[in-house]
Amino acid sequence: MKSYSLDLRERIVAAVAGGQNKRVVSERFGVSRSTVKRYAKRQLSGQLAPSKRPGRQRQLDVKSCERLRKQVEAYHDWSLERHAQELTKTTGVEIKKSSVGNYLKRMGITYKKRALSPANETKVSELPT
Image (cartoon, rainbow, N blue to C red; front, top):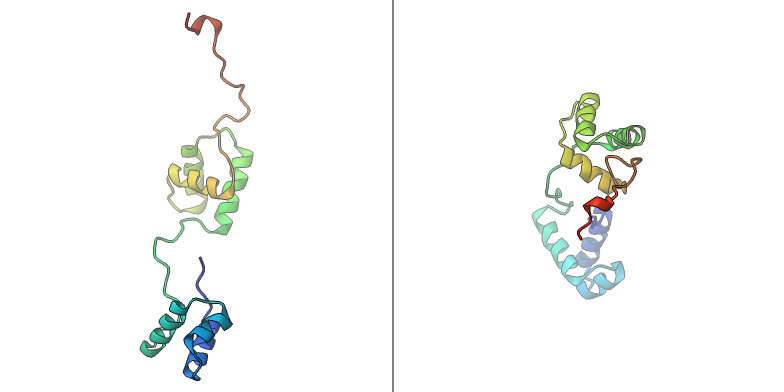
C-alpha cells in the first residue's frame, strides 16, 4: 500500500491544529483515527514526511525489465541461467536465475524452457502392467 501524500498529511495536521475533533478529521479525509493521531504526533517531532519503505531496492529498472521481456520473446528456449547471463552482460547488473524467474512472474510471463517442444509422452512399453 502506498503512503499518503505529504500534502494530505499537512491538511490533516492543519485541521487538527485548527481545533477540529480527530474523529471529524478522519471522516473528512477518509483515513482512520489512528492515522490522524499518528500524523499529529509526527508533526510535533518534525517528521511528517513518509518514511522510507523497508527492504532492498529492485535490481532491474523499467528499461532493463523491458529488455528482459524482449529477450524472452526472442529466445524463448533459453534457460533462466542463460537469460541471467545475457542480462548481466547487457545491463552490467549481476542477476541470478531465481531473480529472472521472479521478474518474469511479476510481468505475468509464464516461463517454460522449451515452449515449442512437443509434450512428453509415456511410451506403451513403460506403462505398468
